[in-house]
Length: 203
Image 1 (cartoon, rainbow, N blue to C red):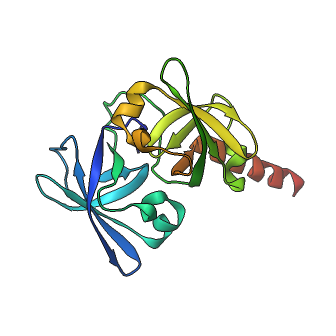
Image 2: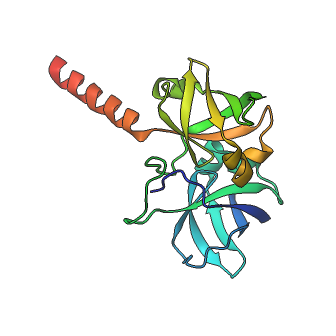
């Protein structure tokens, strides 16, 4: 479980393709000194398991299903990624509860800067996720807990403040960039519960 507050960025120092998977070696910009084999770390919002580590790097493996649904398959050596370790019971939840289970990808359609140097970004929505994205609701983008500004059937908008731009992969966003999307899990649970109740009543 994560909170959507990026702790550091990391650089992809090596990529290996093996049996349909991608083995990634990542060098955090801010070192994590308490990493252990088996730990969960969100890479661009994707929950992956640490398989080995050194003082400078850690290694994770992305399986075919992960590659199909996320931008992990688009990464190249030298690319920057967002990193967050799983939360502790004593951690402040600065964002919202994030599972690290990406639902799909959106594409940046438009980027505008306002007078405050914040970025207003318009992002496309896969059809099957549109119903879970609501105005002023939570959404996770590349592992970042963000508030939705406007939400339509085919797109939504968010704002990235200057601090977020500086400390995350937002600094590299361009029109056309693919972004990992995890919708608020509460909407999916409510939908399933209401569906089960409706099914029970009609039967």
